[in-house]
Length: 231
Ligand SMILES: Cc1ncc(COP(=O)(O)O)c(C=O)c1O
Image 1 (cartoon, protein in one colour):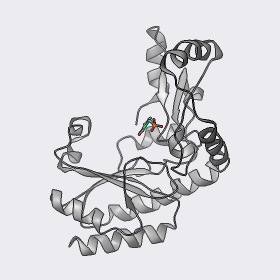
Image 2 (cartoon, helix red, strand yellow):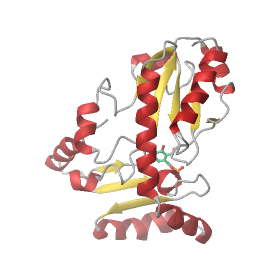
Image 3 (tube, protein in one colour):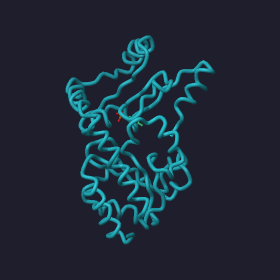
Image 4 (cartoon, helix red, strand yellow):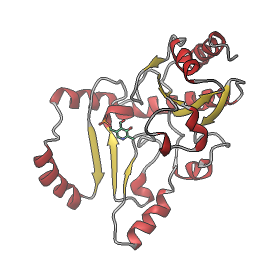
């Protein structure tokens, strides 16, 4: 969790512009321009479309800058969305607030449940009081803390893999912000481990909690803990 307001002040004092990737929070939960950022980048592929069936991206900011981006980057890089993807995203975006509230509620309920499981080595979710960035998140996230959480197991690499295989509703796949719950295991041998705090280094799951019934998801996790011998 980054303190957007403070980073914007430091950036502007030093003649820099601040761009925030708001993909994990979504504009329903966090509005970086109101906190001082100059640009917001959103992966439309994630919460804004919300159904995992189209790819797109957006840059939001002052027209004077966006005109430059459109004239230079778009022409040189060719980032032009297909009409069908644009249509899907516009249709999906209508229900963003409804979906997002459900993602927020489900993720918080599941995070609180995971915190109590004996087989869990750590859980990271900004909505939990135990999260280092909780106070900042509470100040800058207006409606909730999003649908993505991370956790690890008191177990080795193979048990993490078996846990994922034992899930029935939650799908093992990369990406996030879909209606369906997705989980991905990043093992202790993953080359990006150095980006994460110490407790992540034994391997961890990134869990994008979907909009299914929260109790169905908890039941799926419960039976996976049991089958993996971690209940
Ligand atoms: C934080 C964040 N920003 C941007 C992107 C890029 O999204 P896209 O898949 O729409 O190119 C991703 C993709 O995983 C992401 O996680």
